[in-house]
Amino acid sequence: MTMRSVGPYLVAMGTAVALSAGFGYAQNNEHEHATPPTAQRGAANHQAMMANMQAEQKKLDELVAQMNAATGPEKVDRIAAVVTEMAAMHKRMSMMMMQGDMMQMMHMEHDSTPGAPPTPPR
Image (cartoon, rainbow, N blue to C red; front, side, top):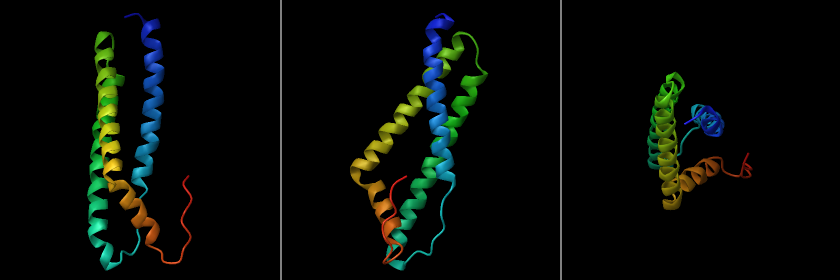
């Protein structure tokens, strides 16, 4: 492949990496709240989900570092590895959303403050 044909892929990957970096920043800014006893199981599930997401982000960060260090034909292989991992992460998150896991966590966070109006999405 020539640099001209790889160029658009590198731009797309750069955009994807920038977006995933923002996602990782959002993951690291957890809020600490007093958890009512009835929500402890949900909180434990939430913490497990967040730990899993952070582990996935670390794996993606490692693949991106490998991609950035690679040159020549190996770079294309590393780009493919990053794209494949991002697609797998997206699929896992979509499955979680379809199962309602993420919606339950979001609902639990909004219900943790009785009487407070729901926080609008950003």
